[in-house]
Image 1 (spheres, rainbow, N blue to C red):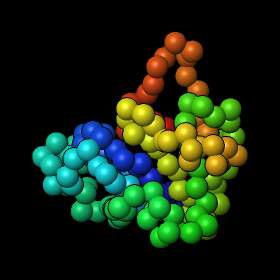
Image 2: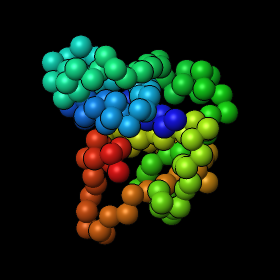
Image 3: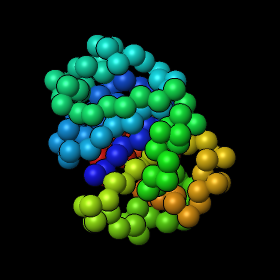
Image 4: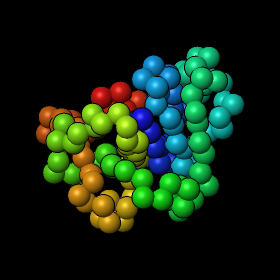
Length: 141
């Protein structure tokens, strides 16, 4: 199963769209606090439509809480700083759980987390002059 991990997401519409994507692909969503919104916020509910009730959403107080509750998880980190493309990784074994972490819209995943996990980082290739992709679009890719 694919597990979408959002590190301190800030924009409710992005998270709502990600919840819709998660429902469509059968993924679980993990939200690491603090969140930039509440889960009952109108814009989140509008973007997720009624799918929010059909997705397993797990909240964590912080990154340490996430690691404590998911020890030894098979996790990958999406960042523009990686030298590996997401297509370099194999997610085809349906008997395994895969966790893919995406960072905050404004700052991404903290550098200390990335530094400690360089071999598990991946990037989405973009043109050199493109600053970034929208978070929900990145998750969909």
